[in-house]
Image 1 (cartoon, rainbow, N blue to C red):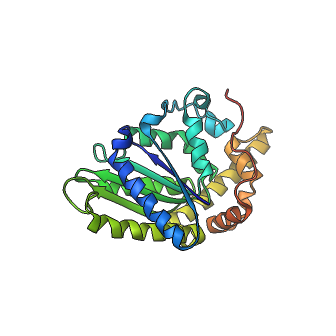
Image 2: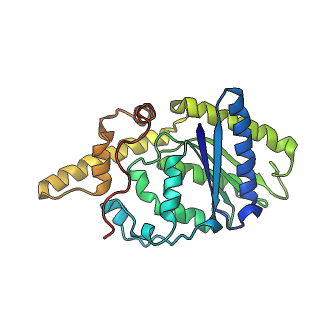
Image 3: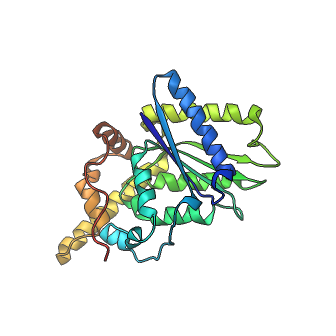
Length: 266
């Protein structure tokens, strides 16, 4: 069973145009998967379904591995959905030339995951919907942020609502686009290494360097390093020669063995 989860950064509920894109892409993946004998489950959440507070810049997540707000709002529910899926969709409407505030807030709340490669092994599709402009720019930014968290992004797309192309309501335009996206997503699900971005390799190398520095410094002053370093060490991330090698090992092992809930709430 291939599990798709879609986070839609819109508070329009079932009327969301971005959700329409998500639903149609999921249908395309399901049809393609049937052809190779794979079953697909699909679940989505829109911004109006959850109560999410804004990041307070306390750095508890980086230092102690847990956000104190998770016990006060619904972010813990969303985090678990993100962790449990095989294919992750992230979609946002374009507001003022960029992603919606609730989309950015979710990314801010999982920023520490980019230091722990928490979404390693997951295949992703990112997309934006716009009335006219900034669709590709917003989708590209979403793709960058998804990759920073370890997602192998196989589809980056956008659709327009009124003018421009591709138009969300024109099947002759959208169906070929969605069909090609579904093909890439399933291919990436089977062969994620072929879709790893060079930027992810650079981020992996840089993070390992910072972890080694943190360990050396805290050994010098005889204190424990930040939770992000401890998690990476517990997962032996520094022993992998590349992000691609780590992704392959993660997939073969069926995920991280260690808990991702982190430390205390203080």
